[in-house]
Length: 186
Image (cartoon, rainbow, N blue to C red; front, side, top):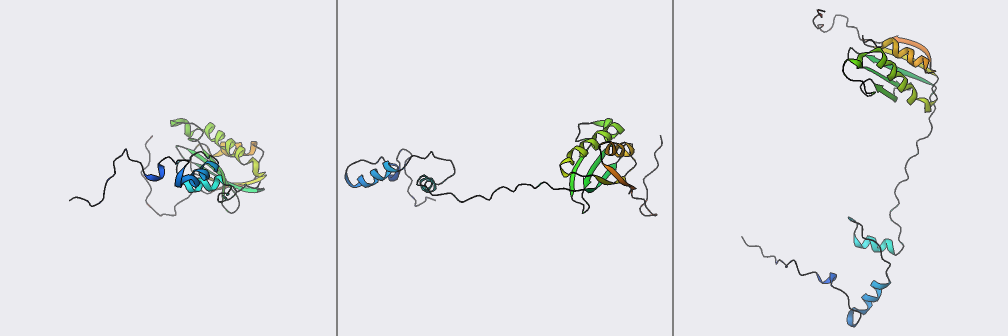
């Protein structure tokens, strides 16, 4: 299965890469080549684009980066999810868009230390620090789960300078729905 295409040896270069001599037919090309300003070659950019840039053409303008406006949210909702193994706190605006969040694992606590009240306090303080640019003053706290970080997270949010208007327990309680897991024997 021989192919009909001719293969050129590696040591032969194409005619366009050959050096241009100053005399003869190629004199005009040599003058044009010498007059063009030198532009460093950039990998991945076509040579025609590079010469156009060297001649003064402007590249396609990139869209300017959006500047995030300083948003002021005066009222928010703090969601505290305290499980047996972790505590997660997220603060949203009244529409439900998350402004800041953190968890015990994100704060660097590992193993059994993640489920402690101290870890929940540190998480709530971190979230309060994250929402400081929004100038939030009032929050509604929604607590979910049976973990030990419930009260300590609420206290930490209050000590961070946020005024708590409502504390609501939103732990899902079945009304004889799915079968519960077996009781723990401790």
